[in-house]
Image (cartoon, rainbow, N blue to C red; front, side, top):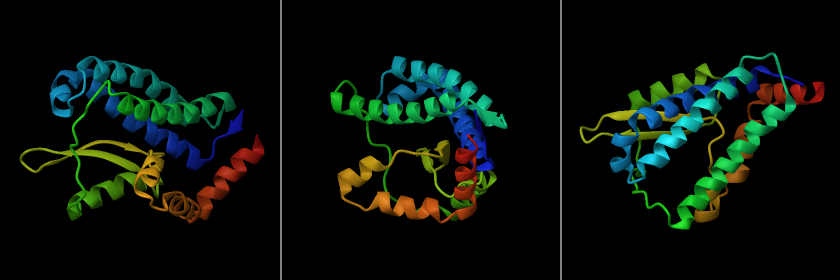
Length: 185
């Protein structure tokens, strides 16, 4: 068992909340999302069903003052496997999703709303998934407190690993919480 620091519990809670939102959207809205994303409906629905079980596990871990080390490790390994699997699926040629995103500056009210959500979980980094409707409305899909970004460094040659290390170590209190939790186990 490891003692769950406030930082770990918040990260797990954020993962559970946003995985739960994605689970509901993918399970219930697969038929509407499939043509929009150009992804197979079955893939979206089954991913949503998997995320329901994942959300329950991660939510339970977030609610515990101490958690089984193996289950926390499983969540971490699962996130890494999810990333590798997603990249492998894209490179396999089995799916050909469209590119819905583009680089742009978010409106101030959207930035403010996202900052409030991140602050409520004590996060100083997250990967966000959003869509913009044809009417220009921003629709929040999910927030990943440990989002996947390494592929961007490899693809674009940007120093993201060093930048991420600087960002994560800039929150010394959170880093000390993690260090304390690990040394207590």
